[in-house]
Image (cartoon, rainbow, N blue to C red; front, side, top):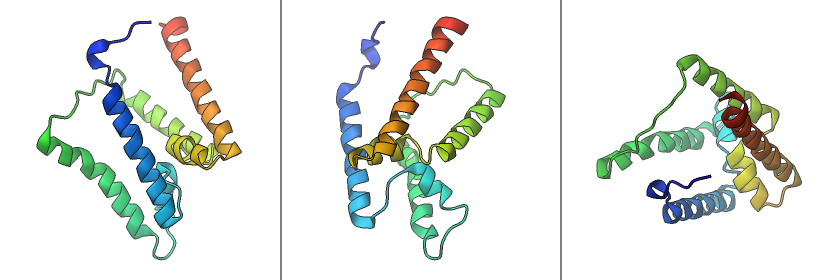
Length: 143
């Protein structure tokens, strides 16, 4: 295994993790809700009375953040080595997995583990194991 030292960013990664953890903690303390993206987005499918506004504002913030960032610095170059059909299939599988697992990595891995949820620990271990297996298969068995 080789580390690409030119793109190794431990301080930026640490700062991002701290900001994410702080945002999740503040969200649950101030709103009593878990900061899981799939749950927030899923709540827009059948919104309850008075519940859609904050969800729309949150999703709008997710979209606005890179737009605002671009005013001050260039966006990173994103290279996707998959075609549109593969991206659609991957997106559908992620959506199915978040419904099947009752949440996404941000909900279980960040918020659930912080609340010492056994269900979130099991889900996060399953996410990680599936990711490890996928990378191993893609890099060592298929390629």
